[in-house]
Image (tube, rainbow, N blue to C red; front, top):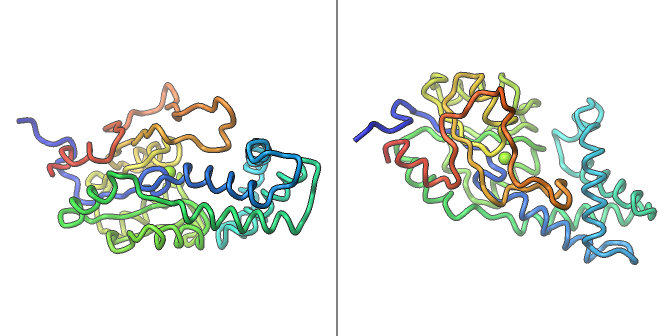
Length: 257
Ligand SMILES: [Mg+2]
């Protein structure tokens, strides 16, 4: 029998959204519900989600500006409400109170729908006694902490690294160095499992880690718009991950479990 692909690995880090939990599905359903409940008259929820996606693609270009980024790190509220303000402006019905209600309803509806994928708990339970496990997730401190609480997974991890708490996020190399120090593991003995080539896989390869790229069929952001591409492509000249998987259970034999 050939030896497992990740024979020497001692620590396994996971991305959270769309790797362990179905974030985009929850976000899409939460948006629809928010616009059904609180959206302006004369527009279907579908119309409003399309306008939200358009506004999102525009806003994304500005969020890394220091003015927005410093707010975004602490709490999801300011950028989420601004996003709703811009969506209502796109619809020609700017309304500050409605923007606040939409933001609040969207967050609540999204959080109530967050679920781990069917394979996640079995994999975490199998790996926990044998490996140091960690989580590296981008996003505001409050939103990401709430997600971890809602999903009930905190106790699985020796290290949880959140962009909002660190003041920096993936794909920065320094994030991966922090993670190595937290679990006291050499890069070549550390595995990263994530769904984004650009944010998870490429920087982990550059950090000298082993990598498994998970590509799930549900991995389509609401901002992709109609006919949006289902899977993120790897740039032609970019390095390959050690493994591409569709389900986390595929990791177990690779880790000798
Ligand atoms: Mg992700």
